[in-house]
Image (cartoon, rainbow, N blue to C red; front, side, top):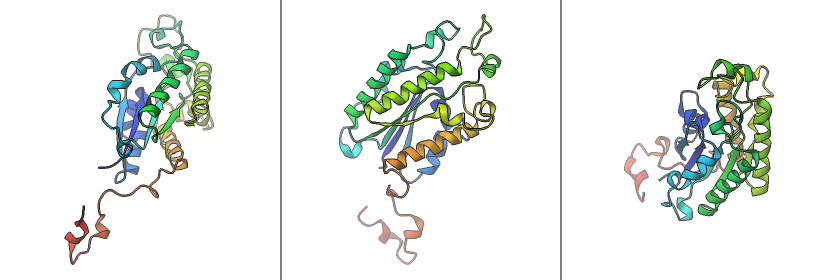
Length: 240
């Protein structure tokens, strides 16, 4: 009944429906105009994402009217894990990362040519915090991610967006504009605080608005209470 907006990504997407999360904020924002569909997979990189595309986006919605309004693609934080640290199994080389993003965009645009695709870069990394919150045994005592590496993958994400002619959000740069971003935006040096989630929400809303997708342009799905005639309520539902 309502058009869909898919959120596709790793744990930062999977956790986006938590209280204060950017996905939950989008649900509230579009609560009568679009359905937000969560497709977040903790720990995933673009290599793994390519393997599950057909499963995540089954070929059931084929007509233009059934195409999603938009899909956010939010990978890179795991791809940018360092190849010589304990998260090496998640690492994807930079050139492969770019190729994988190209393939994901091509898949989505091939299936739904009118759907807006928005690439979101990985966030910055606070390395001292990553040492405090390891997700596995850290024998080297070194952070499994660095901000420099995350920045390289963020730049690659923006380059792919430009090459594919789709929208992009430079989260790596945007968050570092916030004073004390290391703890203001990140809860563990990687995942997002409420402030970090708010930034993603605002950036996605702005990216959608630039493509003509906003509360001002999207119709409400059914009569609203203020449109119902108290003297003849059922008249508002004729022809639905």
